[in-house]
Amino acid sequence: MSDSVPEPPYNRVWNFSAGPSTLPITVLEEVQRDLLNYKGQGMSVMEMSHRSKAYGQIIADAEATLRRTLNVPDNYSVLFLQGGGTGEFAAAYLNLFASKAVREKQRRLGRQLGCDYLVTGSWSKGGLKEVQRLGGRPNVVVNGMVSATSGAVEYRGLPPPAEWALGKPEETAFVYYCENETIHGVETPADLVVDAVDPSVPVICDMSSNMLSRPVDVQRYGAIVAGAQKNMGPAGVTIVIVRKDLLERDDDPECTRNLPSVLDWSYFDRAASMPHTPPTFAIYVCGLVFRWAEAQGLEALERLREARAALVYGEIDARPEFFRGGVDRQFRSAMNIVFNLPTPELEAKFIAEAAEHNMVQLKGHRSLGGIRVSLYNAMPLDGAKKFVALMKQFYTQNH
Image (cartoon, rainbow, N blue to C red; front, side, top):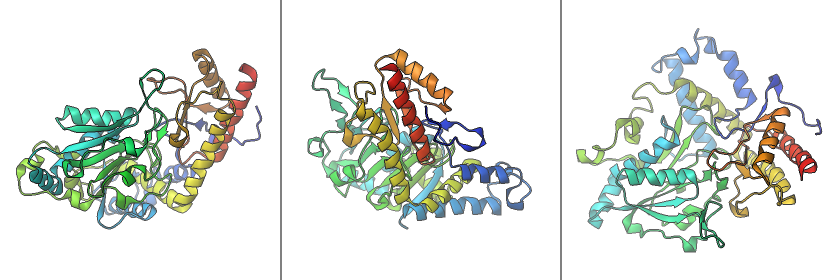
């Protein structure tokens, strides 16, 4: 295989992990420089009180930078939480049904509101199951696509919006979907869902794995939830961007009786994300990544994501009988590219050879097998070039 692509610095590997994932080198270098003594404070951020002036500035700067980068409107709150995307499966449902606006809408209807779920893969299916477990009335708007040959449900895209079974706006509390499914490699095109939903119904979007990879019109969403460990920082912190009117509560204590404080967006909003000790170090690193993303610009990061993905999909399309991708073109993820080889034995051999060439974390999710190459923001174009060079060599030697 050609060695024309330079290797990463510091004897690092090409890390194609689906998460936790690779971080920008400049961010890691800054963390390293300040690890023992942050900006003359005489201690690490890991040792710093979250009530200190220095840490108060860290978290305030992180929020301000994210707001600028995503152009978050003033009528939205930015929250730093814990629990990951999985925690937000429950939190989104419980917070929306505790909100004054949704409760008033439900009183007008005279019965429990439904909530719409678009199931495009494992993570949106997880959100649906959590709401069912909590006693909600989820309406499955769409559940993948039905195979024309077997009749089985396949997570390879979505049917046209005209075929979606959206609930009536006056009977629906919110619409929920996951924009990028890391396991199945399905990414919903920007604005497809918000364009299809009545503006009176809040859209809740899980952007855990494509946040900051392209511009987003925040004001079209009721809330955006995202675990940080893909594009925004280390594991341990979850970002929620929520419209402030959805945080309002009425005076009835019943509205939050089933909402634990640790999942209560309004509770965290009132305390500026710090009603108790937050994941201080993870938020600090996220702030550095936000600053890096702001310097790059979301338009430039979007061009980079498309360029990386085009290289890999180009090789898949050139040899579809060998590199077998199953996602419809319109819904191919630019973040997580999944494919199979003709046999499991070839897949194992491919992963082993990749490791010999300094490329790791390529094994597909345990539920699907195959190959999964994750191309998050911090992966330079050279990483995709290196991977494609391996694909070409492996095909030549094994087809």
